[in-house]
Length: 229
Image (cartoon, rainbow, N blue to C red; front, side):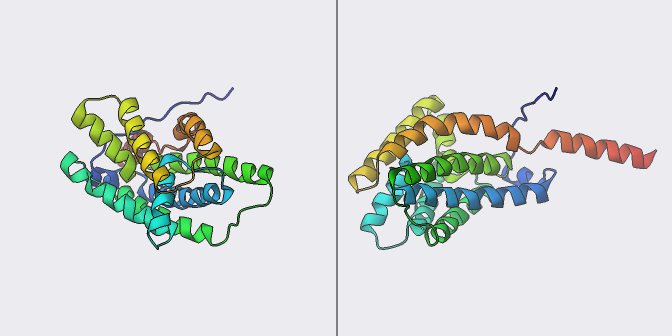
């Protein structure tokens, strides 16, 4: 019988994230997760059944600003990152990569993915996009190279206000959803599916994708002891 164990995320400073073991593996996983995240966003956009709260905002802004969806994603990510300054949050390498790579990947995917004909094909595209989004999130979070700008905003506000994660996250997502909707962003079935499914999916996938730094450190000590004996 195979017993699954949960690997805990480490609380590392930005410098320690780069000094921690398995850096090459974690950088590859980070890049794969961010590129897949952008691709999954494009799938949900092309499904045309409603978007997650942040993408409702991105879509709404894209309606009024003459730039691409991916560019809007990059700009919003950079602006959110500026909000870290008063919260005294320090971005990691993965945080900065998140701002750039997701938007670039999303624009690339939008160029090759089209909206399918028929509701069921669009629903299949939506559900696939939601699952891949959760997998991508687990990959880049599990690389332990820093949270995305939006996640960092949430954790920073939790720390500074003393409010619960549930309250802060809900307040942020309701705010961006309302603003995006007022700007013409797409709200619909996909918005509900994402809200219901993304938490449980990431909860299930994250332990499988998190790089175990403690095991790597222990293995390094054992190798050193063998070499000296």
